[in-house]
Image (tube, rainbow, N blue to C red):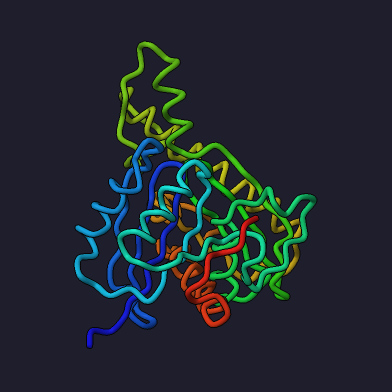
Length: 264
C-alpha cells in the first residue's frame, strides 16, 4: 500500500502555495496565482494534476483570503475525500496570542511563529516578504506579542511605475552599485536599497524594544534576494509557512481526524 501524504495549503493574497509532505519530508511544493473568482472545481483540477494519484491522509490550510475559503475547503473534500483543518480559533497551535484583538492576526503569521519557535526558540522575529511585508515576534514561552505590517516590495515598486509617467518598468534586483549611471539602475537601487533600509530600520527598532532576540528568519518569495544585504536577518527559510502547517496538523490530527474543522 502506498504511503499516505499530507497536503498543506497557504492561501495568500498573491499566491496559493501547495505543499506535499511524506512523513517529515516536504517532497513537493507548487505556487499558484491567487484568483478569487476560481471555483473549487478549477482548483481541484489543478491540484489533481499536480498531486496525481497520491494518497492523502489529511490536509491543513492557512488562509488570509476569506472569499477563497469555501472554494479551497470544497475542493479538498470533493477531490481528495478528506476534511481539511483550517488554522482558525479553536485549533491548537501552541502559540498564545497576546495582542489587543487576536482575531485580527492573519493565520499565516501565527503559522510562521509556530515554525520559527520550533526551529529557533525565542525570542525570535519572523519577516515574511509577501503582498505585505510582516514582522512578527514570538517569545521563548511561545507567545505572539505583536508585529509590524509594511507595504510589500512589489506594491511599493508598482506605485512608482504607475505614478511616474517617464520612468520605465524595471526588474526588481540587486544592482551592481548603489549609485547608478542610468535610469534603470537608479530605479533598481532606490527600490532595492530603499527597501533594505526599511527592513533593517524596523528590525533595529524591534530589537531595541524586545531584548535578547536570538534569531531573525525571513520567508516569502523575495526573502533570499533581500536577506543577502540585510544586517539583521540571520537565515532564510522559504518553506517556513509550510513547516508550520505540518506542525499544526500534528498537534490537531488525533482529536480532529475525520471531522469538520471548527468555525471561528
